[in-house]
Image (cartoon, rainbow, N blue to C red):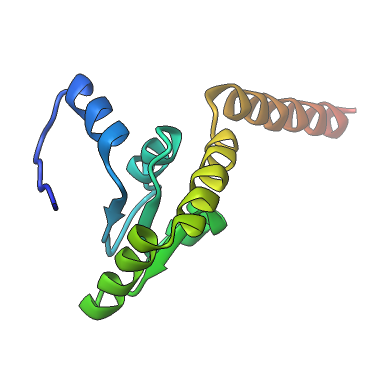
Length: 126
């Protein structure tokens, strides 16, 4: 069954992600693409458009399709729903992929960038 939900509360979202057999993300343009990472955090395999930044964000943890080709999308969804080995691999890879985007890691990387900039500006003053 396919569900087009519209807006859902956080509680409903949590329930949907835990019950979903796959999360399909057919976006043509994204600035980042947080919803597929949320799905991965819940252990939901992601079937995503190969457009924009999605392959960079999701890495090899998602099954991709051309968003302008409905047949390609259907085949990608079918692969995830029918191949249990692929599903389990995607769930495992998804959990690993999400770890790359933790708040702690982002804060540490941002701090490191600021410290590098500060050191460089101090060196220029000397």
